[in-house]
Image (cartoon, rainbow, N blue to C red; front, side):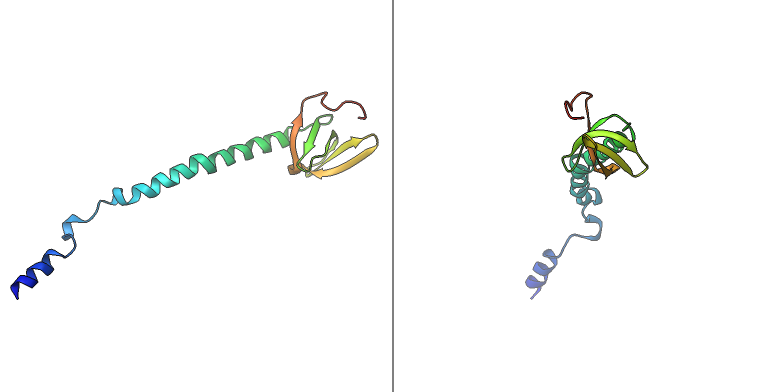
Amino acid sequence: MSFFISDAVAAAGPAAGQSPDMLTSLLPIAVLFAVFYFLLIRPQQKRTKEHKRMIDSVAKGDEVITSGGLVGKVTDLGDNFVEIEIADNVRVKVQRPALASVLPKGTIKGGL
């Protein structure tokens, strides 16, 4: 009978002083978070800052393209909206965040 008891004691888990190191158990989670931060979160924050800076710097006469694909020249600025002339005497109002990019001067030729 004592033979079976010694096997049972030998199969028990680690002693109280031999618990796994906390650093080793949290290291994979920390590495995963760092990978997500540098590959996903940080680049998105950078793009958001650049887009906000571009929107804030738009001025009358700038040639812009909207996220919907409209290309035109800025004719009026408001706090939340921008008026864009997309053809002769054809103006549309779009929200400032809908501006995708500011084009170099002279990109639009002809009708405007």
